[in-house]
Length: 114
Image 1 (tube, helix red, strand yellow):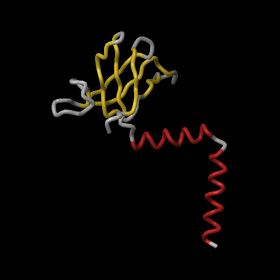
Image 2: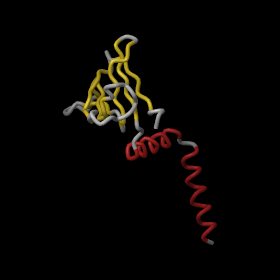
Image 3: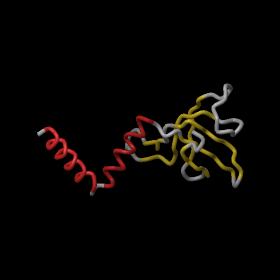
Image 4: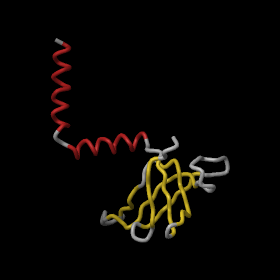
């Protein structure tokens, strides 16, 4: 009887999530908010890499205080990778950063070395 009940519950959950891709994406983002993604943010000036931040859990979009409209910049916390080696060295500190969505050339990705 227990096995039948478990099969029924998992079947219903499977059907619920099978047709709802956006719901799956929301759940995935929720889990990542708790577990982190070990992200890397690279900032470019033209074709030249000028800054790299590592060990970023997530980037957030700023919202206005009064009207809840998204502002044109993103922010987060990460380690400034001063020597661009993809590793957190002793002298590299965790920092807060902001960058413009309009004028900043950037790439955000999961650290391939971890």
